[in-house]
Image (cartoon, rainbow, N blue to C red; front, side, top):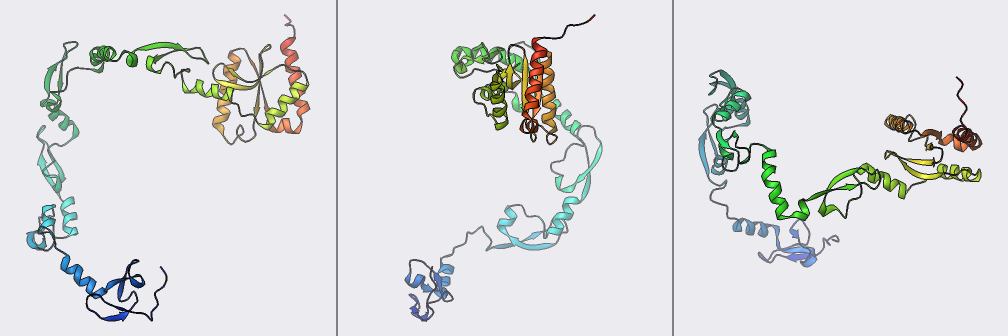
Length: 335
């Protein structure tokens, strides 16, 4: 809102007084003349006071109450007493909350101390006594499946029918399958990645293809790979040398190899200096586990750092040539 011109004069609609058209004399109203209300502040406040009608149970009527801690009489509102006000001040309320009293346990008869404010709720000296109190009130019920007797608390006596989850499933699962056979019938399906059989409901048969989230992740990495510049450079260099390999191959259902020589079983990984370095020790441990798993399956693993490929790619290719020759033409074993 633009600033009001202090030279303008506005007449109050109620008292007919001529007052400067400023916010000191009128409340703001965007729809009014000069952006101000038609009544002055004095008339507006009188109108609000006349229209205010308090609730009879609210704070207009006061009464005299007695403090539960110090016994002093004090004035307070009826609504406060209805809401549970018991003390004349916060100090009395705090002192009453920390005041200790003694009581006899209803189960073991032991005398124990507790805060006085909990005198209406505290009945037992420990949780063990509370559990014993619950056990004394338990109701015996016969299981509908196995006929075994078991006990429950009185509040669950009407709903409890079975002594265990296994007994409940014996009755409920066949009934659910009979009511909705498509939803509750399950079959075994082979995982498209690892070939493992897993159980799945017929309702999800058309939507599931993998046994676990890890198999799904490996499949997505293999079909939609994110190839870095270093991997692309090494792949182009190996293709120029005449190597036959596969890029982004899934091995042992645990990892996706950057390059894989299927005929000789050679696996190549290109490790980034940041993600596979000492910054992330968890990644180093994961690489060791993958190397051990591939070695158990009979593969030979070679890992090259990003800096080795960028600085001297010829040395990397020479190392690969030596590894391929060793796998193609192994040295004879001398006895």
